[in-house]
Length: 459
Figure 1: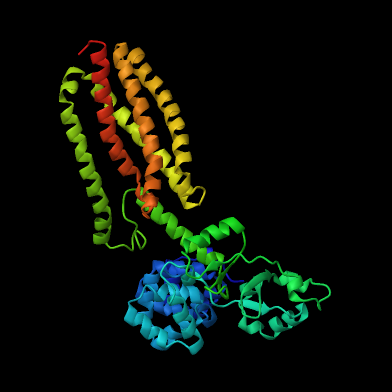
Figure 2 (figure 1 turned 30 degrees about the horizontal axis):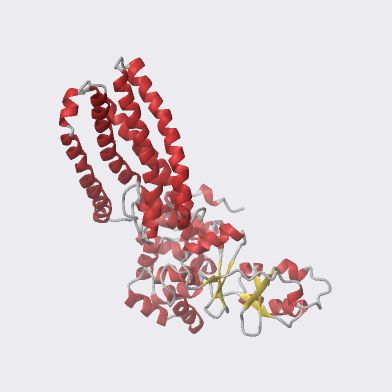
């Protein structure tokens, strides 16, 4: 019995290769999952991956190749003989091939497409003709559809006679269309097999659901579709409502992962990376992180201006300096909490742009509540623990209430403002909010101190 894939690592396989244990390696690759083989290819040098690749059974090469990162796919295409590379592209699923072709330089991509078989070339041009980041780029133009007017028995006969043309997963979603090809509904393979009698029309056993996505729609809508309808596929239609393809879950997982990665990186205060951390060149990392860091630094320079403006208050009320970090960090934390909730709500369509007023009212109450809690704790810290007088406690408490309230409202409204201007709400990052709250916290604390002490006649 072949050993499990998990018992092998790249070092062990390289050892077998160096000792020319080709038969043993072939048996290993026959039993390993394609995804596990691709992980090994990522761990070894390109020069070592070519001999390994030749030992993979030919029917599985395209699948293994599809799991590799795009940059490694490009490198391997350059090293493999042209006939092998074209064979791989012909055998790849259309979606995986499109993902590779759109990353290649245009002249190289066009050259490779021209060498594909006529059928695969037609599909490649079709998918690449759709806008970048559209549903059309992640759909498969291969699907099973029957026109109304045929019986269940006829549909099953058609599937049997053409079984070699259908990928197994295509049969999980059989579409029913009218004579022009417009979507009417769908039927599962189980529904066809269990239909009794089999002479009934196919439309009598179909689900008349016609929810579909346009091929020109943004690919992010595919994530929302799966979340909303909980189906294992998405029918894709053209402007006339005719079915042109299907989107499957594994392709949407990639879109969801990319979107989540971009949001996390943007919320961390940097431009999103096109490649993984280690695959990104040093100068690209420096540029993408340095731009945001410089912007945040320039914003923080206003902190020095604010402190300079309240030079008198700092000299006469030195205790305020000890409470300053506490107050501005509370405002920043409040803003970051609100921003993260709203950014996620907008991302998963839990809320829309029109909900901003409802969110504003809600955060107004939450900000006041949170500010009051922290204000009480700040008063307690200043008076009962710090031994300061009541005026100092009131100053700290008032500043905390104001800063936390302002932070909650700012953090909640900034994503809406960015979305209104068609910008990514995730850009309202935690560092940006913290920088804004640093400036506001300084102004509020020292201004409140001057007001309170002036009112009590202590200044």
